[in-house]
Image (tube, rainbow, N blue to C red; front, side, top):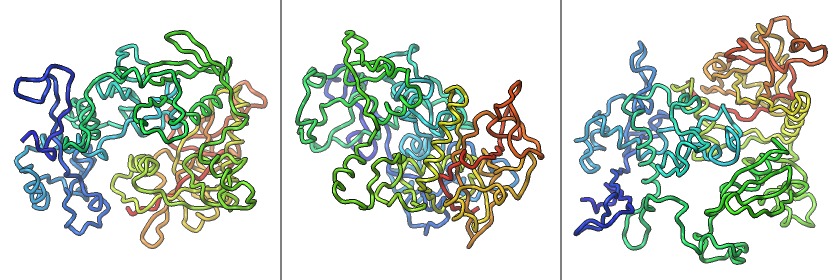
Length: 518
């Protein structure tokens, strides 16, 4: 039965092989399944012939807010309902499992159930690594190697080794005690299964649980492979990639031009000093000079420029323009604005979805569109730099916030940005500006239906330094003991703000439009 690749994944260990078996002493056997929660059921448009389970995701995690409330959840809490029972019975007798066993099986196989671990947090220096969302990130800020059980730094690791820290605790709040207790093992199983393919002579089995530093001598050779540089080396899998990339180094440099970045390449560890423009091998002490290009150009932009060279006016040429990495660069950026539908399978979609469903769990997202308006984006970046300079190069607080409005204003906002004279007509309790909310459920109260659906903006907002607002404010007040320095925004509660009032539209960029049904 253990040889059935549809029921179990075998992760080889490092010990000696057991007598009469291909397994080693510390091999790990993990139960796997192809059963998943039906996504169409959660969108309320499943015909019933999906072959997947009809269950509330939040019930499975143990944090459905309707479990003990007066109102019943719109999604099933019955694991052994007739529909689910027929699915479980056809999949290796899964119907014989207890509710606790089935929950564990689903959690360690379905990657969409538990929050993802932020890979950007695990790269780059500082408290948040290279994660630009920082404290607003909806993914877990925890050491990836710790979760996988392979962190060689132990208690001296600079990354978090606890699921109960502030960031992770928010993403994992209200989990069932048994789920919370087994989180590390569940994530470790999840990663092992993700890398698993059946051993049939054609595909590779999961890698053994060993430190990533124990590699062959050829991998860490100091000699540069020219075939690898030219992208036609047949031994690509042997080349160890660095733990960071040029685009991340550029972001770190723009954030702190005198700072340092730690990274690894193969088994070597380096420190890159922006002030000295020097890269140092921390183990052997060798140094190498580093040079920054006058203007950072991504690989894709460079290829576009090469292809479009000598072809003036061709669409897609982004030369000299700072465009976000996730934008569709095939579109003409000279247009006033463009709405681009975000694929449901993308990380970008999941990020916005998680942020929205924190307080709108019972709503069904129909689509998420990205607003691409280069003129507004460049003004927003310019404003951010001005605020940074005004605060003595201190970091400017930036948040993703929600705004509900009438659908008739959507095109105008995408084209010209928010206007408080239109967007702030519903209230002036904390000043006469444009109002944004931390929680989507609050902004939902100001959304107007159109053809049975609601629309809500997710905006990037430079909230900066804020103070509690007053209804008579036409702009933020002066800071304490200052005659010329003003606050950047006003809030409802300066100790725990959930409503932000912005008086300067250059501090706002309308980033996404969510269409949903409540």
